[in-house]
Length: 366
Image (cartoon, rainbow, N blue to C red; front, side, top):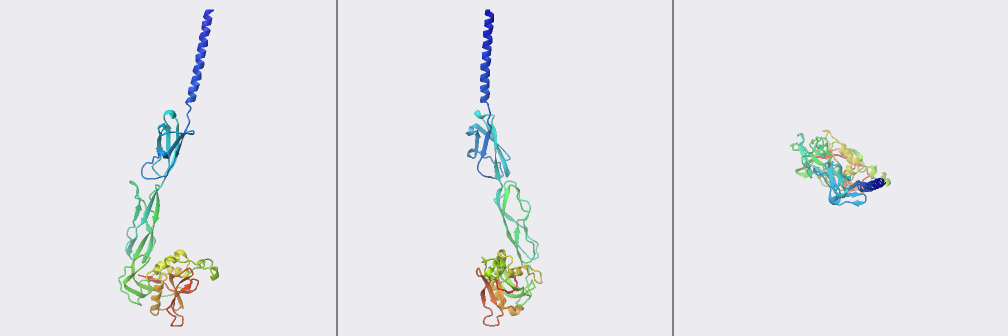
């Protein structure tokens, strides 16, 4: 009887021990439950040729709603050199051991400003190599690929230097500034008034010391006039003439227009940049002349006046009034009377309404 009781007590003791052990085991397992970490990266980042590792105040690591201190985790990075999406992974330490989580941040392409260097050559020569300046320089061993190009043409004048195929890869964002390519006269012939110029026109103005072309800053020495007129045309297209005057739009002033000798070519370009269908300027720009030159333009007021002085040498200037490329105001542009029938009026320059139909004669400088 005593032996049986002792065995029962032993059984009870063993059962109690098992129950207690099980309870503590369950509690311990609950304490080891792992909460994933969340990682948030702030700030902006651009490619710099090296690995980019946001840290400190720019990285927030949380376990649930609790923000971890820097000692509670370590960080690892991947895809964090090139422009694109990079990853940062946090691994918990101490009380957060075993917890992990990842976040991402964007590496933007590095902005690079590229400016084409202005170039020039004499007509008939081979083009020089087109070069450029990049700011800032590319990082490390990074290099540009491709090359700049320029607008086609071999006539004397100016041509845009464009980006062409120049590139620096996906790690860079290029902001490009075009350059100017100038083809200068290679003609050392000495011309006189009335001679036929290289464009096939008639020389009507000579400055042996040279005058400055306002679009390029280069010197020219002669003006030649086309042997024929472009017709009788308006200065502005209908899109820049109000309905009350037969158009569909509004007057516009051409900023930067000038009157001086050497400014006509720039005036023409400025006008066409605003009003691409401006009849008088468009006709002059499209004119090629007997020798297929592509740099004819509508004369400025002072250039037109020189043409008036030599009208009998040039010939064919039979229209009453002619347009210049010089703008005057919103509604008016420069013109000059050539053949009014009254000697006291011929040669007078006016500011005329841009919708008027006046004579147009192309000229070129060299």
